[in-house]
Image (cartoon, rainbow, N blue to C red; front, side, top):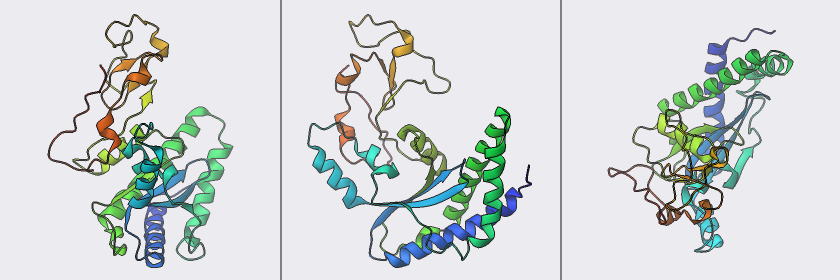
Length: 254
């Protein structure tokens, strides 16, 4: 087990990440970027950068057609749909040089761990590390390097395979007043909310709890047969990240 000075590593990562953002912004100074995501992999102890511009999202929404199963926010905050994703480090020998040894220690400790609790600790600790770095980048106004950025600008982190609901959880934690506008199906209940006993669509007698799906936009539960008819057409259009009025999440079909 190799010792890791997490506080020192965080300080070094903040400098390296800010430098990475600065270099990208200078190279793409005319790009109206609206979001930057630090995509991390705890198992590899790696952090790569993704950037989004609005025109790419608009093109995907338009290309899907009016009846396509596309919710704007699902594309808007998920780096999978962005033009610049997981870019190679612009200056790996610069500010990243002093970080490399500490990241190598994190990766080796995690990959060599045999106990489940040890693996869980390193996973959670690395995720917390990246979140702390993001908060400090926000405090340092690292987005100032984007001269033609779109406002409001989002800076956050993500791990591959996370649901959009989890991404919005993280955004809501980072930005007070963040307004959710995604919609997807989950087979898990929200923390503190009980799982339904059966499908909530009127007239449906489906009662197999293990197969129920939860709409993340309004929280209603549906069986696999009723889920396709449950829609939120208003969420197919762009919604503001922040608003004074609450987001209406009433479904089109109840």
